[in-house]
Length: 337
Image (cartoon, rainbow, N blue to C red):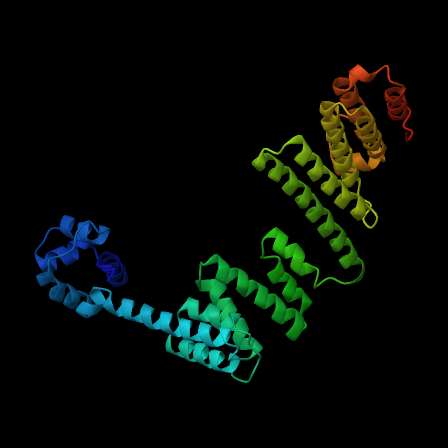
């Protein structure tokens, strides 16, 4: 049995609004002794339990946390029973068990969250307003992040689909973390607003995929062969998305991906593949500079200038190759190669 008398003593004292010295005086012990009890450094002598309980107006069982332990065991039993019934597809029975558990323990947030996570259907006793009240109670009184996250999502669903109140639904969506908020707002927006948001959503997620590739590269200390495969996969995603979402940031990433592929081919001694990658990088470096400046403020170079500098610093040994001159000339004159 996990005796939590130190926590109980501290909670009872705070609830009564007195000091450690008050209990010490009642028991004829030092305040330091009471302080040690509350910190869990030692326990009071068993003969002191009845007068401590009397002082706070509780039973000895309550003082020792026995009632709390019994309560938690009972809650565990009910939640397990609900889980088994739900797993076996006995939905109505499972719902009845968790509903009865909530009536027995109306202040337990484990039960409240399970009740709300149940595949509920609205009834006279389990109405949308009742669910809203439970969710609001979680937001106001419970600090468990998972319960709060679920409550916000349920409030969004109810206001959007049952109450037909899009503005209220949006208020709750804005309480979610950014990625979750952007996902859920796809269900709320319509028309041009939906198109703008979907475009922004796609851009963010495509960038996240590429950053995931780069993180995987670093975490696994990938070989050049494996790194090349990752770049090919990332480039395919960007190229495919560009057919539907024309975004200058994708060109910037594709320019860098192709440049890094060229560097790998340089290490492999594959000159033809290197120039093909450089040619692809140059193509993406030539997207409109004005759009790029709108995207990234206070930038020192245009993508064209940036890539020309990279070409000169990393691939200068190939200046005599006609293909190098063609690429550099295209960059200088702002013409596709």
